[in-house]
Image (cartoon, rainbow, N blue to C red; front, side, top):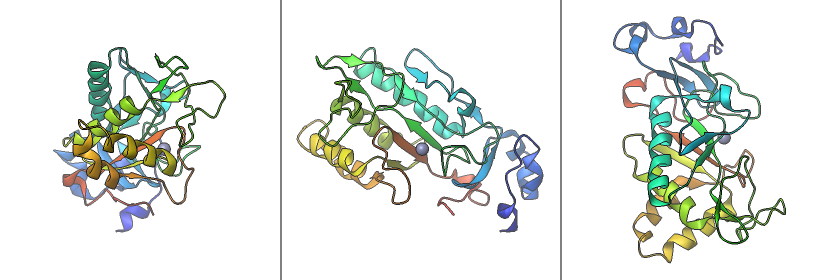
Length: 237
Ligand SMILES: [Zn+2]
């Protein structure tokens, strides 16, 4: 479709590049995700707001815009984790910029369907910590920065499980490094309470082939909204 070849109109009036029916009600009142994750933009995006359970990483404040399906899912999962493990705060990095389009440091994150989320971590004594930045972990769960932090298997599993179970959002996939993927699946397989979702999580957890290995954050993507399939492209270009 020719319209999707148009570049993002950052800060302009991207509505003009849309098929006519998307410029009228009800679409003219909705948040729209347009194009591919790595060649797209968004209209009337929703801003993710920090809360008691959700922190926005320093530097990502201007890139906290996304489709409501993504933004609301992040809010729900942060709340769910805080309920399961009191005091937990979800650390969220970049989503997309207000109007979408290319975002420095990322290939995708253009159309409001992608978010980077930090791992939950424990200190050397096994106590939950509140990291302010993304920390990389090896497959044996140790932080690579010498901080002594460890990957919190339980809370990180609860997080991906909450995304997978969140049928309102419609998850496309979760990127994470191969080593941490193996670690998480191995952990959950041994926990009777978590076994139920292992197959579903395994299908959605991937290490990207053509991007960084994602050993310091999850990259979560929601699918195109059903009523926007004419303007939203599921896959990268
Ligand atoms: Zn990302």
